[in-house]
Image 1 (cartoon, rainbow, N blue to C red):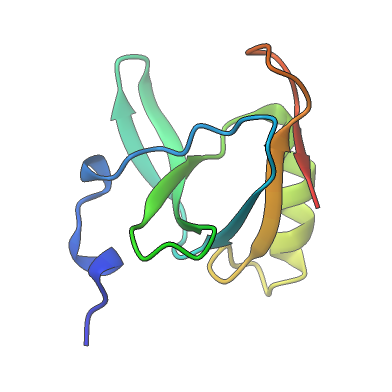
Image 2 (cartoon, helix red, strand yellow):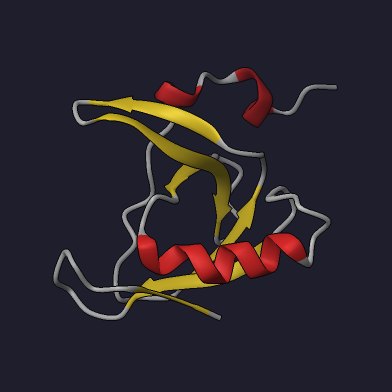
Length: 100
């Protein structure tokens, strides 16, 4: 059967605000786009800390490119199924993302 994550439109889901606290993330989808006031941004659907309710992770940040690219290559080119922890290195908007 369809799981809840498959039946909800992307723009109904709330993007995760990544903070300086580690969050455990599992990616549930390949890339989709979210329409924002700045234009389209690339997102993947995620489960955060094992939650049933899917969220979005915006993946446009430059500091996400290398870690995600590497993980994706190790996962036969797919985002779906990737599991990692993510946080921001600092509180400022420009702080890079850190992965483990």
